[in-house]
Image 1: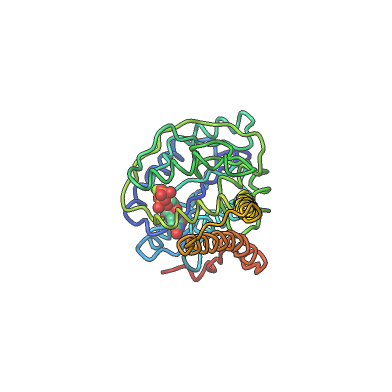
Image 2: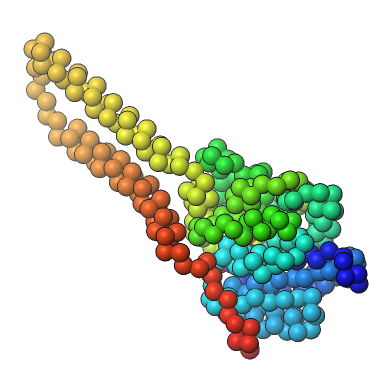
Length: 317
Ligand code: UDP
Ligand code: MG
């Protein structure tokens, strides 16, 4: 192989994927064999798997030098694992990010590469269709429908996940974003560069169960909104103004009635209780929204690393 053919790295976070990994390796190796003229590297990031995944990764890396491994010291989560992979692959000419469960088909990679060769800095794989159903699907659709409306910094495109390609310079820029609460598609959009799209049909998970629980996806969505928007704060301000306005109007109404001498015996208990609860609730919501931001600020100022990498010789045996 040519020493000056481009290096393309495939960054893939792995967490408890023992059921699907053999098939993933097979499909990737087939792609690598078919696409000569590119120096392929798969960067497999083990996010603290507790099943046989780590051993499988190790075996694959030993058997085929095109596969490299990065072992995190524990489960840091999908976003952190992705960040670790992007740092590890920073010297490649282009980096493809994808899931290990084959929902993102490796066979699309040549199209991503073609767009990159054509001059794109970031290539997005845009889902034409999806396989998820039920509550998970509803949540995902709702998120994509509202996200760009909620945030100041719109997503590059609805219906994109992590799957895509980034040029070396885009990866370098991305690696400079050190914030803790990470939302990958938003950060990639923030980086910009010459963005192109390639359409694909999202596949069913090849094997095993989804590794991100529903509550984790909800947190991920909230991270997306809170780290790219101050709208929730503004909404609280508006809500406050509204409630204060109603209070003022009511006050004026009672005062005028008093002056005009219209006195009606009020029982008032129900009104008081309702108002008390309503105002208490509004205040708590305000504090909660403040807390969301404060908690994120706290995470940032602690400056803890996003992830820790297990030294090579201590990789799990
Ligand atoms: N993943 C990870 N760490 C985690 C959870 C998931 O690295 O804590 C990986 C997982 O192995 C997969 C990718 O992230 O390669 C996407 O996970 P999953 O398929 O569960 O999520 P979804 O398809 O629902 O986005
Ligand atoms: Mg998946």
